[in-house]
Image 1 (cartoon, helix red, strand yellow):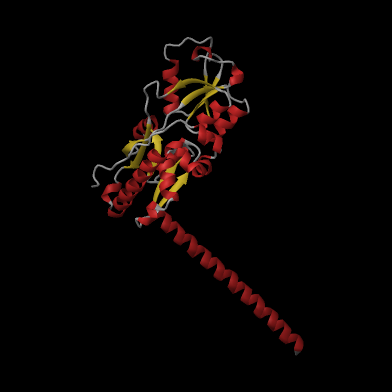
Image 2 (cartoon, one colour):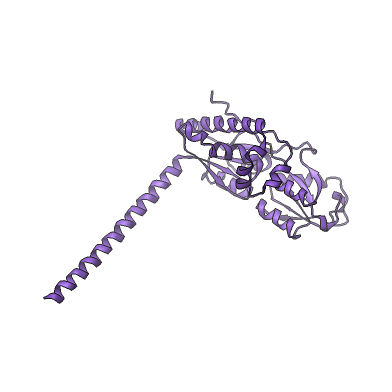
Length: 292
């Protein structure tokens, strides 16, 4: 009899554990579905670990979006192509990109609306070990860039009318952090870098061959998917995003990037010395024409 009672007790425990596991699985599935719904309803913005994205990072970290009662989420990618893929695939509503990527996506049928320029610029920086001082010396050298982007276009512009001893090889390295690491490890002859990666490269005495600003090329832009303003909730979210973003621009312009050094270090995967060495930067406002 005692043996039977023990067996019944064990059976009850096993049954209880089974119910507990099933309950946990059910709750876990429900939680995942809830989180997925919340993410779908939030306004998602694709950003990179670059200085031109700092207004979005600052507004998010300061909870200025939250204070307006909107759920705005930053989706961080290390490659511009990944940001644009998310935009084209409708997994984000807004992205920081460049005009050449916008042209490429538009040709492929992606409806995009410009919200205004960013302060992004790119420098063509040669590895100091490559002994290259001029673009004309880039023959048989490798340049890291991204196809159908500002860096691809800027490579065309930099080489236009320039005679080199042989072909210049364009190597597609999309991840900006990987690009910088390849320069540090002497794995690439030259590359286009945005800030703050360009400043880090200059600090290591690598050579600046070209600067998109001096080439009169201002290609950074904030865009959103077309058709969003027809949805009242998206319109409300976008209005709040613009307001918080512009507030961050004002703060960065007045206080300077160095005032937010720890945030820049975290978001851009850089260090305090690089932040301190950054040039003075101006962050322009963005806008939505149909929102008052």
